[in-house]
Every structure is written in C-alpha cells, then in structure tokens.
Image 1 (cartoon, rainbow, N blue to C red):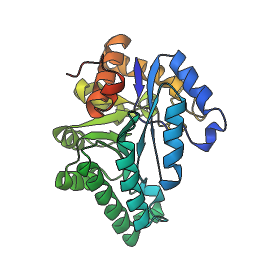
Image 2 (cartoon, rainbow, N blue to C red; image 1 turned 45 degrees about the vertical axis):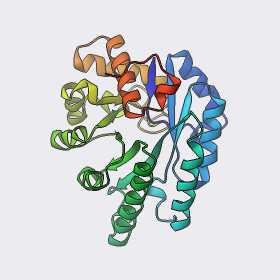
Image 3 (cartoon, one colour; image 1 turned 135 degrees about the vertical axis):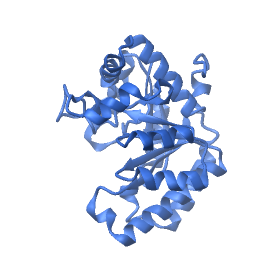
Image 4 (cartoon, rainbow, N blue to C red; image 1 turned 180 degrees about the vertical axis):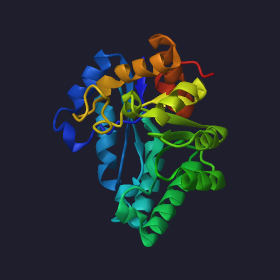
Length: 271
C-alpha cells in the first residue's frame, strides 16, 4: 500500500471530483491520503472529506501563506479544533504549518516576524497534544530547524524537502521524515534526486502535494494522488530497489512519522 503524506484533496482545482479522485487513487493502491488544512476556514472541510473517503485522513493547521490574514483568534480556534479532533481516529497531525521565504510579500520584516510567531505557537500546540507536524519549509529550512530545536514537537515531516544534506541531517537528527514528490521525477532536479538516492531510506516518505508539484509526465497539468505509485517507481529507480520495497518502506516511514495512522493500519510494523 502507498501512503500519500501530503495532498490538498480539498483544493478548488479538484472541483467536485475530490472523492472520485480519492477513489481512483485507492484503485491504484494508494491506501491513505493525508489532507492538511491551510486555515481555519477549511478545518471542517478536510475533516469531512476524510470521513467521506475511506482512504483519507487529515491534519489541522494554519499555512504560512494564510498567516497575513490570520489573528490570535485563529490560533485559539486551532487549539480548540485540535483538542476536539483527538477523538477522531482520522486526525493524524498538526499541519500544514511552517515558514515560507520564497513569496516576496512574506519576506518583508514584519511578515517574517508574524510567520515565525504563528509557527512557534502551532509548534507549541503540537507539543502540548503530543502530535507530529507537517511542515512547509520553502527557502526556510534553517529557520524552521531553529524553532523546532527549541520547541520540540513529537516529530513529523519536512514537506517537499529541497535543502542541503546538512539540513536534511538536521531534520533526521530531530526525528523527522523528509517528504519527496513530483519534483524528484524531473531529471534536471539534480539536488533533489541526489538526496532521494542517498539519504537513509528510513528518513523518506512520499507525497504528491496535489494539485501542485505535478510529476514530469503530467506537468504542467493538475497533480493527483493517483500518481503516487509512479513517483514511488522513480524513487525505486534512483535507489536501485524494487518498487515493492519502496512502497513498503515509505508506508512504514509514514506511520512512524504519524503514529495515529497506526490505529488505521495496525498491520504496518514500525522499524
């Protein structure tokens, strides 16, 4: 079984097809799709979608792109929503949270400060409830590592990882997994492919980030969780392993990163 550890199945690009897309992914042996929230306005939607799709689970968090319009009440709402969601077995993490230093507006000093404040507060929520985090680390790996070292949530995933080997080791040393997806399928993505080929396999999980970061054979079209097996096949080729070995290892790694998945898939043994 494949596990897509990061997929925005609720995104408007899917229109009314989200459940059908999840169904097609299931037919492709994608046994679980983790749907992260991005702000308070889709908390209920991702939870409902996970309830309706047999192969879906969800996370709750405020994405850095949505921080500019967020306020203290959003953080209070998140804390309340996380506490309530603990009773739902399909709730698996706090996310998507993190820092984005790629978008110019988010790089302005005041907005960098606000992003860091929201990130730290969400790390505290995760730590308080002993939950892993799904982290956005675009152009911000060192800053994310700094805050995680200080607050120490219960592990999680550095999503769409595209940093250095040193930064990768920093996350691994803190117990985090690294998410690889469609970007790895482009032959020109030399650094990402080197990381995917040489990092410890037990540190790697797979994701689509659908509808974004589509693989080479779909680009620039809409990404979908049903393409995860093809992404996994590229990882298998890069590592000279069988597709079955990659499927099993990355699924086990996903459960290690998000232990609440183990309640849904108790047959997956942790390393």
